[in-house]
Length: 119
Image 1: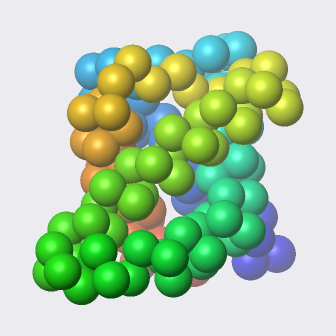
Image 2: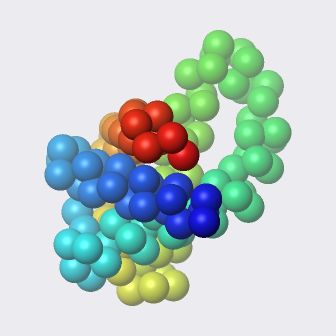
């Protein structure tokens, strides 16, 4: 049940990013896009991100943690590509700047929604 709750929170956060970040658009429907992107993002954050965090640890330390934001943007780009490739719907990201801003918006919205819902 916890996975479903976090999936819903991430879906809402993705919808907020689609709404407020120029360069990020829903593909495959205004509801299906964020839902499938959130599913792909959960998959990427579970499988790929821990390995990427360990490999980029020296660079993250050297930049005093700023590279972690870049890593989040790269994971969002990967999730976007996976959702479009696997499910045929998701989000389309125009540039790395849009992915960077989108990852910040998704992180902040997820943090806020998780604290409100208690998930």
